[in-house]
Length: 267
Image 1 (cartoon, helix red, strand yellow):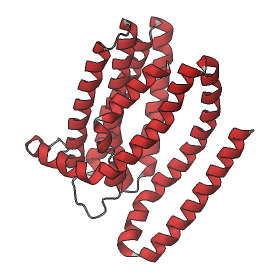
Image 2 (spheres, helix red, strand yellow; image 1 turned 120 degrees about the vertical axis):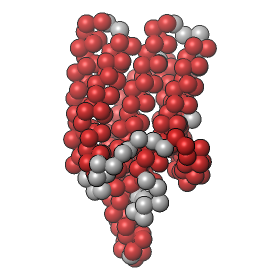
Image 3 (cartoon, one colour; image 1 turned 60 degrees about the horizontal axis):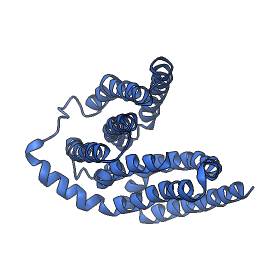
């Protein structure tokens, strides 16, 4: 249900939301932080989030199958958060091709595992757990070796001795982005919860169908924005006029896309 969805997604995002630092990582053209600093902060935040999700899942009056499904989704999101740190490194080096290839492997492999597990076990929890296992395999076998190669073979293990100081500095740095992300997450989840409660499943289905179009267009815009992010950071550091011109073009494109989404939703 939508209520279960908002508990799962919001709880996973609530604690480590300030660790949504891929944008900061991808624009760190001055090298203020090393890759393992981001990895340390992400590991600490994800561990806290998993603990919170587990605690709430067992305290809520849910059925056993629902609890297992929520925990499986949380584990999948945890694996995804580690991949996101590696993607930030790829993006900083302007290797969007590596991100595309890694995401394609993870998406296709996860989908196959999800479908086959659902067909064999007839369990949502088992299917999501299988998808998470494939994502973890892709992280360890495909994505991590690439990160090691980009880092010149240097050790990418987290620095646990400085974990508190690192997390504190990154938390302060990422807090404004985290607040914006929290609002965006709420704008996606809260309408579904309200519609399910007051309008029923039919209204929720209609809304979800319309919102799917917006999400599909948003993926295109997000991909373009992610591609431009490191270059915008370099422009900001070296040529402010070029930066303002590029930002103006991107904002105009966003306005056109937004207007198209509104027209499509109306029809």
